[in-house]
Image 1 (cartoon, rainbow, N blue to C red):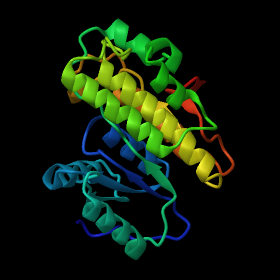
Image 2: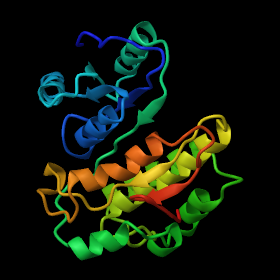
Image 3: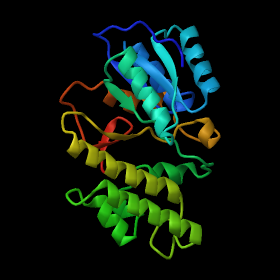
Length: 244
C-alpha cells in the first residue's frame, strides 16, 4: 500500500480496478486530469506501484496505489478499510473488466460489441433471465453463468444454444449488463451503468484493436464524471447510449 495523497473533502475520490495498464491506466490519467483523486488498483503489487510512479512522473500527483484482488474477500476488505480511513468516502468506482485472448478478426469483434442479447444468444432460458428486467436476480444470473461454464467444459456450447464465436466475451458481457440493471434498480441513489470502450489496442489483444487507449477511456470517464441525477441502468457503446 502506498502513502495516500493529501485529502481534500471537496475533491471526488475514485477507484479504478485493473488499472496498471491499458484502458484502466488511461482512465486513471483522464480522471486525475479532471481533478479527481484516484486510487489505482491492481492484483500485482509491483505493477501497480510502477503504474502510479509513471503517472506521478507525468504530473498526475493525486493518484495512489492499493493492491486489489477481486477474487479475494480479504483484499476487498483491505481496500474498503483504506478508503474509509484515508478518505472517508468514495464517489466513483470504475470496475474495469478485461477480456483475455487474441482477437484476430477485428471486424467480427467490432460488430459483436454492438450486439444485443437477442442477436448473439439462442439459449432461450439464458436469454429470458438476462433480458427480463422485472424477474432478474443475482442468483439467476449466477445460474446462467455456471450453466455456461459447465456446457463449455463438456463441449456442449453449440448444442445448448450458446454462442460459439467469442463465447466467453458475449456471455460475460450479457451477464455484466444484466447485473448493472439489477444494481441500478436496487440502489437508485447511485448512477450505475455499463460501458464498452470499443475494440481498443492493448496488450490484452496483442494490439490488434482499432482504437487507442485514449479513445477507449473516454466513455467510462464521461459516465464517471456525470453530475448527480445522471443516467443509470443503461449501456453505452463508447460515448453513445446503446441497447443491452
